[in-house]
Length: 393
Ligand code: AMP
Image (cartoon, rainbow, N blue to C red; front, side, top):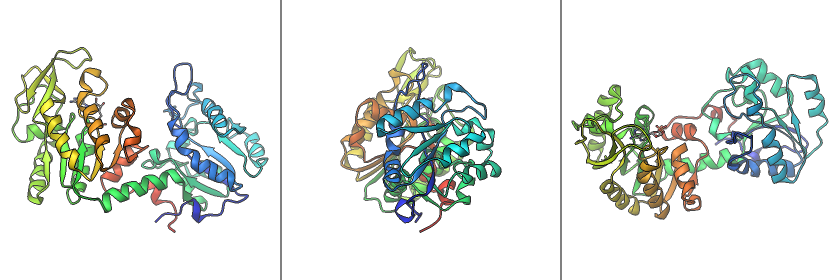
């Protein structure tokens, strides 16, 4: 078990808090969705009420080591200030002399926020000297940026080794939820997997084979499986290098008595566009100039019946090309079925979460993970490096 906020003394201490404030901004730099800020509030409020001097550090977008005003954290500073009803000191350049002065003038309960940490190329290089500079600002390090927990960067990894540390409430909640479903799931346990990158999902299936009862497969990855069992998938996306492994995985599942259910029908398109002609095909019987874009109506019915009886559900990856409204149907139906079920449900991944949000079903899901890549790594049975580096209790 990792140290959490309850295991460390923050009273009067300077606390470097790494969060993920990578919020979407509009062209005129307004925050489109402040969920990531809201998710970090419990940790920030705890630190403030326990008299810490809070120094918040985050990235925003991919500035790739270059200062880019379009990716400044300035809009986040003002939104956070409004949410907390508190003035927040903004530190524009941590390499400027004034930074140390500003930070050392913080009083107990004050908050400062550093400018986008990815404006410095040292950040993504996990640079030790840069991490030393960050460590020099604080007495304690708190890691609460779950969405970046799979990436070893200076502010998420190297700095953690240099200070007494703990995870924040958000990371604690994420770890607890994944632990709950992966270690002590109530059965039937159903995994729903979709999306395009089969190379990400095959290790998930491998890890889940000893835990789940049924795996429902949709999305682009399903066509490699269908091809592996001899189906005709027309122009659908295929990962030729994964065909053998997909077949082996299906055989392994069969040996273990795990049901892996592939789509029995799919909506296909004559081109990869939002306005393409849509036609339904039985699985493995695509017309040669069509490609699979979504699961079909019989598949959604089959998946519905399995989801209905589940006691535990994990879901990662859309059932079709979610970016095109015409091919969102399957993903939205699955979101609805999972929301309606009484199962403990844990979901992660950009389009997966977006579908639940689009339908306003957030409150009907037990846990919506804030990290796509990080949650995938946990589903693959791997450890998150930025969590592993945190001290054990
Ligand atoms: P992933 O990152 O692996 O979860 O994949 C998400 C992406 O998969 C989304 O951008 C979807 O558009 C894409 N996707 C899902 N189904 C299909 C499909 N049938 N054909 C092409 N792309 C798909």
